[in-house]
Amino acid sequence: MNTINDTTKPTLILGGTGKTGSRVAQRLAARGLPVRIGSRSGQPPFDWNDEKTWKAVLDGVGAVYITYYPDIAVPGATEAVGAFSRLAVESGVKRLVLLSGRGEPEAQRAEEELKASGADWTILRCSWFAQNFSEGFLLDSILAGEIALPAGDVKEPFIDADDIADAAVIALTEPGHFGELYEMTGPRLLTFAEAAAEIGKASGRNIRYEQISHEVFFETLKQAGIPAEFFGLMTELFTDVLDGRNTYVTDGAQRILGRTPRDFSDYARDTAATGIWEEKK
Image (cartoon, rainbow, N blue to C red; front, side, top):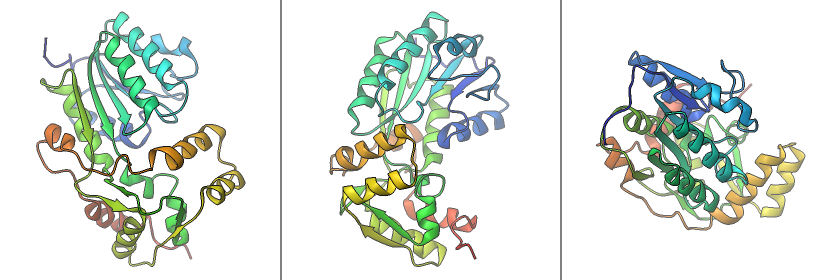
């Protein structure tokens, strides 16, 4: 039955303080729709690593937006997403929208677990977030004036997190999206060097891109004290996923949004206007 979920009940947002989750929460709240944030600091608390916290957050909700921390590509994500999805369905919550990743085998195994759970599912399979340059691990590099990565000339169709949030809200509140997988990309391909140049142009700064070896990159991560779970994620992203497998754009964002997704230059312009990339004195 392809109807919307009961929006009088709260929508549970797992990762409700993250890049997309916080945006989804803001959009739903702006419509006057009830929201429950699924996080360790939420009430009731939710922790992916503690299954005993799962049932309470599902009580009385109408739908769930699922994001996995630290990333759906990490080992263990498949099992956790599958177990949570089954528990949600057993608890009477069938409307599930999953944030997934392109070209990531673990993410696609998690998608299959979601499909097998009996849920009324929608999958948003997304490319690299543009916001990684302003709200993620690349912000410090931008502030320092240099992005050093082992990315080479591989092009990526960066997607704006605002577009993902818009898509998630549509999937959670409107009919017509059950059983749909939307592979979401931005409208064009850019190398990391080109992305750095666009950020530099928008911010009025000289932002350089330096190609480094995987060995130097991983040593930099170690010296920075990156947690083990993120180190493994970065290893997969820059040794496996960023190999050209995702170097094409798709129409998934257009199909669910009903419009062209935001271009990276629009993201760079609007983000620069906030002052977040201004050089620290």
